[in-house]
Length: 129
Image 1 (cartoon, helix red, strand yellow):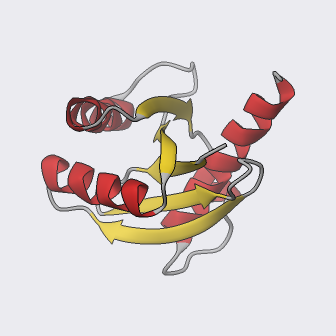
Image 2 (tube, rainbow, N blue to C red; image 1 turned 90 degrees about the vertical axis):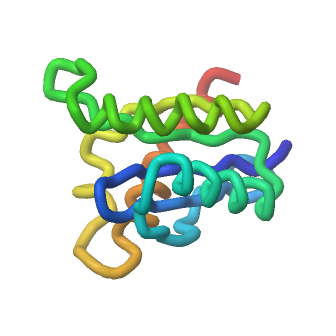
Image 3 (cartoon, rainbow, N blue to C red; image 1 turned 90 degrees about the horizontal axis):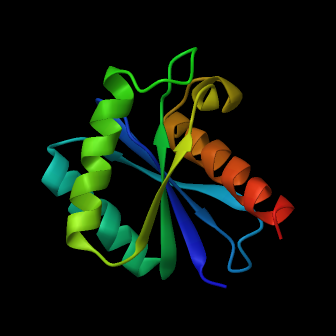
């Protein structure tokens, strides 16, 4: 099984996390500074290639009713660009609460939030097999 890369898209920083080769455990990878959607997508895809991933999971910040709000719409535009640039599987995942679950602030907070998103995705996928 190939690795899975998770993306926690933000207005200032984008957190990335990576799974182990078995697709079981997530760990924070890095934080990249947001520049523009196209450049962000290219940076994400470069990391996906370097990490030999088969799937990219992009976090969507859904509102309290589970609906797509402004932040989730921005994330969906990033997803559209990613899908236009690669044949890798791109999936979305509800990231609600991931930043709070990642713990205290720090330079790697966004990467830790991406790891929370990824671990939830991996756990869900595992429970369905």
